Image (cartoon, rainbow, N blue to C red; front, side, top):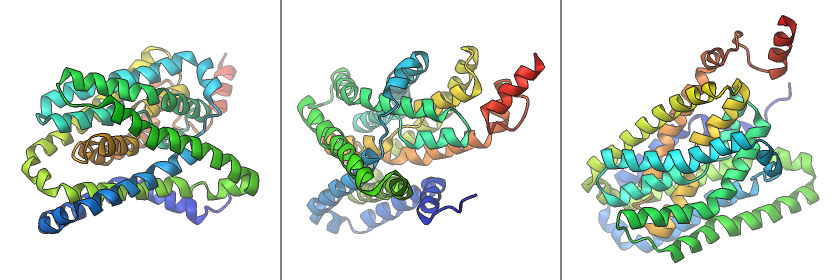
Length: 351
């Protein structure tokens, strides 16, 4: 087996310890902000500028690696696509409204929760599907089409939320934000992707490709740090509300994973296709949510999506650890689900 490159090891390390690093940067930012509030206030412009730079560092590599080649395949699997779209843009926002109303009273934090669960799935979901030995081809297609659908849906739903809860949501600013942090980087990223492949060749591009998600993750650490540095005093004042955000994350992750697992079994999807739907339905792209919240609204609105990766990674990794039990629940008698072909041959031999 080919030895893993340093870039692959770095990406896997950051993925594995994502929750730990997010917690560390939250604590560092919060402690510095609460210790030096005068400096933070005097340098608020600098902090905001660094935050915007962090957003670019976080967003652009993600666009550079976005795979749109599976869009046609996604439309062919229309049942899978419909379920994933309903989970992303129906279930997620609905749970955000319900749980936000139960656990959080601050309207800006509620808006942050809504944005956190409104954004489409992340490309990391494909990696989780791979770890579950699920249908990676289907997952890649579902992630791509869900991301594209999210571009017009996010401002429409955010505007609706603002009108229902009497929040000032500027549709013009929100659309400009979507253009600046999603559409423009997407267009430039796709063009640069093609250029790099043409100049370097696909093999060399694949070798350096693990660097891009690592840069995105590092950018997310930076923006989490600046959010809590610049708003440590507000977090202290609204500490009980922030604890409410933790509660919403725990309830959302638990209920969503259980609901999807039983729903797909009831609808008679096999194990591999089910895994291809579960992770793109529940694994949200909080980097995008942070960027939209901090740019179109305020960094205080970005606190929920800055916190949620701590819980998201814990829930999803725990689910992966339960892979043998979940495979058994879907009717696979062996604990080994490495290859679908093995299972299909076993079924054919039993007939």
